Amino acid sequence: MTQTFTVVNDVVLADAISKAASKIIYIAPGISKAVALALGARFGSLGSLSMTIIVDNDPEVYRLGYGDTEGLDHIKKLSDEHMLELRQQPGVRIGVLITDETTLVYSPTPHLIEAGSDQEDKPNAIVIPTATDALEKACATTGGTLPQDAEIGRSVVKAESLAAMKKDLEEVPPKQYSVARIERVFNSRIQYVEFKLNKYKLSSMIAPIPADLMGLQDNEEIRNRWRNAFKMFDSADSLKVEIPARDEKGDIKQTEEGGEVKIQYDEVTIQRDRKKIEEDFLYKIPNYDVVIFRSRRAAFDKAIEIFNMKLADYHEALKQKIKDSIDTTIAKLVTVLLPLVRNNIPARYLKSSFTPDKISDEDLSTMLTEDLKSHFGNVDDISLPVIKLKFKDVSYETIHDAGFRAALELSKIPKNRVHELFSEHDAAPETAGELF
Image (cartoon, rainbow, N blue to C red; front, side, top):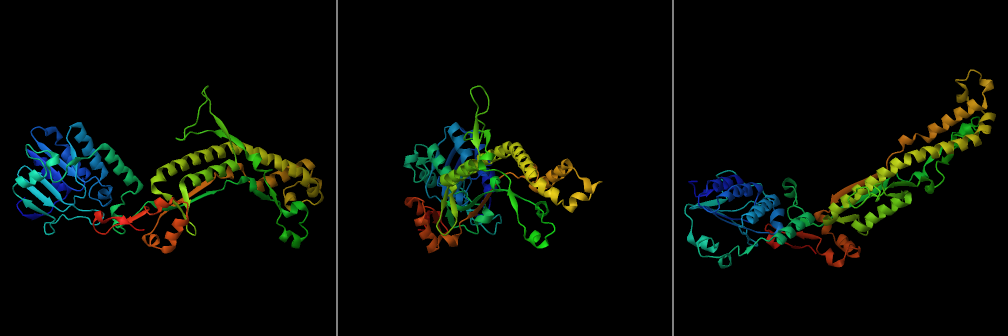
């Protein structure tokens, strides 16, 4: 680099790191995977090469796009393996890279807000062709100095603080940069969720009984007004089946003998499972929609996955029982309807008869059975119960709405959590504050 004002990005940093012979000092808010890999490639030279790495371990750094957790994880792992202290400086928002006798001082790019520059006429850094003793002393990288003597980076990044930071990011994850630039100042710990269960109440299914089977084919007015239907199943109890019991991972439980543990499952149990998921994960906001904490999303998704497994087991076990129930019901209906049909045979029953005036009860019974089957439908046509899920972010406008804030206070969300649900900041993350 010959220019004083220049551009620094991950490519420039990685290149400078790869060429260092005796010294690398890296100071920045965060670290990207590309820079972490470049630094990691130099760990094999430790001994002849001194290395100091100082970053900020605040999750807001990664929400703003100053780096990524993959890079931090990679460099933390290598640092631990090579007994090199990965140091931290809360709030640091400048970048410094010293390689041998060259010093780069640059403005790190928060990718949440901007894409960064790769053009020389849009500089974000200055090059100091010599390393300064004062700067190295401030970082405690010179001989005889200890981290506690430094101006910055006096403490190390501990495994527990890294885990806490990653947990915070799981609860309020960084947004995709192309989307995040639109709403870069707003974070929400909740999101709307629509959770519905459809097509599981088979006990309420009905089948139409054609008017001409009731002897009404000659009365057009009554036939046109006829809306008779027959309940296909005796009761919800008739649709109770046994399905495999599943553990919290969704695996089928086994008996000591190696068989499957079975449980009774029916519409009531399905409703109970749905209600339990709602109670365990969801909050109803009065006059608004249902919300879920982002921190509970992974567990919610797993609960839904297991619920879907149980519904599939139920549907499969139910098929034969439904078929048997439909066959029994149709046989009973044929017995009841046959005398009515015999006295007034529908014209459509006669169109394929060789002897229209001499249809036997057996033939009539067969035609009536097939007719009813067509109206009851095929067991394979009865669809699997369907879980409907739809997620939507809470908008910036909504969280500033006085009615919504009041509704949150009236919900069952713990009061000490309501004021921690949303945060916003202006350009700099250190100004982060609660919205209300």
